[in-house]
Image 1 (cartoon, rainbow, N blue to C red):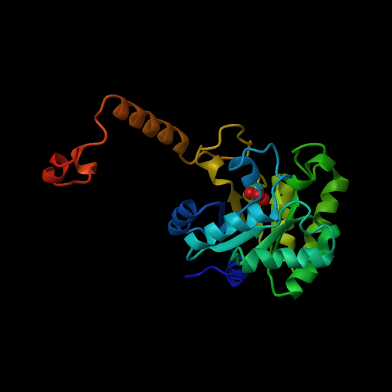
Image 2 (tube, helix red, strand yellow):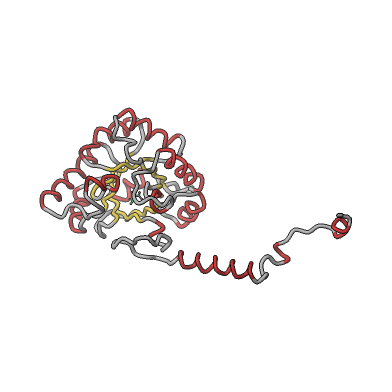
Length: 275
Ligand code: KIV
């Protein structure tokens, strides 16, 4: 059954945990979708794990549309969330609605995600007024890495914890159907989750959230540049890939690949008549 924003609402009401994972291409989206997650996030983290940038700031609307459309083609049941990249929603409400609309109409996302609290509430309101569901994202907001002074846990002091609660309530009030809490102390994330009617989706925010999200390259051991503290490696796919690639190199080198069953046939008569 197709997951929708109503699935998220019902899960919160029933106390059922939600699952979200990233994907950035057709084949991976198919695997993730068939495994049964509620939601696939086409995150701007693709800048790092797919494109090799050091942060998400260079990711463009064209990148996001390209990858979101590929994921949407591979997804049947999961809710596809298209991430709004850096400065695609901060240069005015009109720009924000147009860019959110492009992720829906060209990327075929089912909703969009954007980073920020109180300061983006007018944008969330305008996009939801355009009938585009919005997932908010507060706490560590990677597009603000330079303003935050690095990829750091947020909400540790009394003042910043209060500000985070106010942000969570504000994005809910503005119409967000869910909110990602990234790198927030577990007890604070639990408190925020208990205060909201919309589900919280945690990443580095502990088990008290209403759902969890991870970058699939992290949890499957494919991205090796850096593994955040909050990641559990559920499989070592990177190692399996390396073994497979080495076996291919060896088989080509020793002539054991390709075999007869991998070859296309032609009549010997034709071969004999050549030159
Ligand atoms: O871009 C992304 O993958 C994200 C997750 C880390 C929540 O925003």
